[in-house]
Length: 214
Picture 1: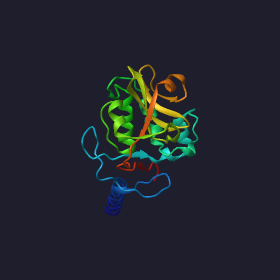
Picture 2: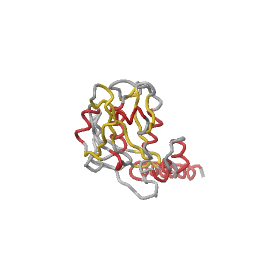
Picture 3: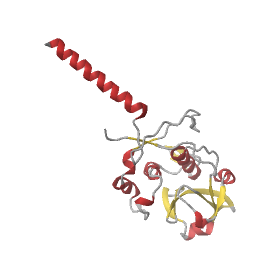
Picture 4: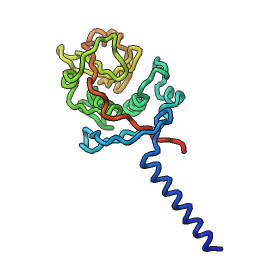
């Protein structure tokens, strides 16, 4: 009898390990439940190693997303990339730091580069003035979620960048308040707005949603 129970315990262990392997190799889904595959050629711009973008699928649930968005006046069903608000929740905890891109602090171009890297799988480096020439210029009235907006804050040179969210709002890192969401029509930003750009190339990979439920 003891041998039988021992064999059963062994079988349950094998089944458990099989489930773990199955989940780690491909049991991923997006918000609609469609299967996705791992990207194979996306490189992490910081470590120069393959970059695998994973997010909990609960981000696609309206209640979870609204919780991350707080009082931001954008309708949940108009959000294309909920990962943007997960990034807002993450980086708003850290202070501003010039040329920063870690938990010690982050600046405006560091925030945009980090979001482009982890949400869109695109690699950028340098400051706002370095990023702007690489983009296709677009008029303000054609802005879409994920586009980059640029400002001339100092000495009439491009010195600030943010990421457009929709409804005239953009995400950026400020010297005094850290990572926040602002309105392009606020007088300070309206007077210093320079232009907007969009990467002409398609994202190098699609973020993967790691199931939070069996």
